Image 1 (cartoon, one colour):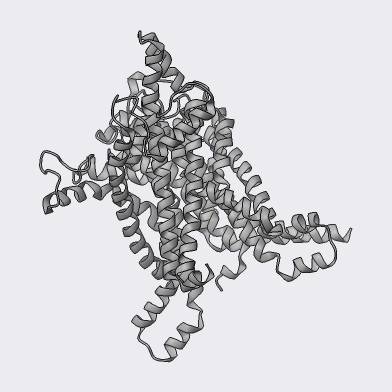
Image 2: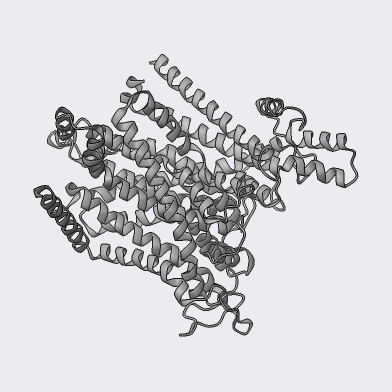
Length: 334
Length: 295
């Protein structure tokens, strides 16, 4: 069993590394080989401002993590070497701030939001999905399915805008931005601070939850519908087991396929983080990517994009490992 | 001759099935009507409105009236006109991107599922890769170098980002179909692969393509609206996203109740379009999967 697990993990890691390699190559091409090459632009701007050429080149080298001189493959290798050491260069916009610091600083806030949002929507979606499946030919079942499909189909930013309009402007129940109020609490592991962080995270997390629970509901509904006819449920009923026990049998079997959906929804949610964080002024990875694009801060932009991709890959691996740990059939296959 | 007659009657039966599924629940007819309405707005919008909508500084955030059924925006432009003219460009791009997605996704899925082997595993690795890449962040990163304001570049990028899930769906369907009796019979008869793939397999995976395509096109519409909403594309066309951007981040529609229709109109358009698509997908599922029909 352990070897199967290890082989699965190794396969995931190789694929993840290949993907990170492709993404970093892409960002290198983007900042170095595209028309309007930002590295060249920065060097020329510095020269125009009266900097000697070699000094201008050195400044660009610090910004992007490679010396923009000589054969392209050498520059590429140097860039990749930097990324291996997690040296993502320095921000163009705010000189001297390492990109890695900013990216790592923004990362936890996005992860907190995404995880709470997905956890809450998973719980709601699973429960409502079971109800929608059991009552599928009644009005309740139909309405649940339609509402689920509708929320699943509406883009997350629409839900974000509506929540923001209602709860930060119409009724000022929640703050309109930030991760905590620095005037009221200082960072630390105590009740008031954690409460303040949760208070700030509540609305954006709710936006994620509302945007994704429809997907869980639909997946759970079709999964329950396919398990409902199975013999083991009939056997359980004939053995005279209570409906609660039968419900537990049903839910445990029906919930398995949802873990494959988990992987897809992580990608969607991290992608949607740009909107949610922009709408709620929440300084996570999405906001960082958005602001770096606005100010054409290319080193920051590639760093943030790389980090979002890494987050999605790691989340995918965790979702798959979780799935194989729960479902014995997958475990044996590996 | 007889073959043609048979085909015509099959087609007739198909459309009869479509009509029956639509009629079974009136909500589905409403869905069809909504989606057709949006297509009509996209095609006919430019007949009714000039390319540059008239400004009217006297009439900013005008009250709702017959002349301005959805009020006016911060420059006095009619909001209904903005919503209608905003459909054209978006639908064009989404349609073109959807076509591209359909071509790539179907070809890859059929090839992978039917031939299996090494080509299949390579193609599926690529499909997984395309699926894992966070699409929207990639799009906004690309806006910095490629001018995604041009319709064909935008369609190309969207189509290339979005084919992964369709390819996966078509492949898994093909995998299970190829073991079924009628395909084995066709192979046993020595029919050419081209015939088996286009005449036997394709009609059976068409439902998945149709459903997936509809979802993909809607996704592409929202991706474009999202890009304009964030303000990373040049604002030179009417687009619901441009309206949302101005309403949420600039004109303070979230604060002033006068400007509320300007915010609600594009939101309403998105909700309505989603509703239409959801209702049609509901009908499609029943048309193509008779087991779902409730007695």
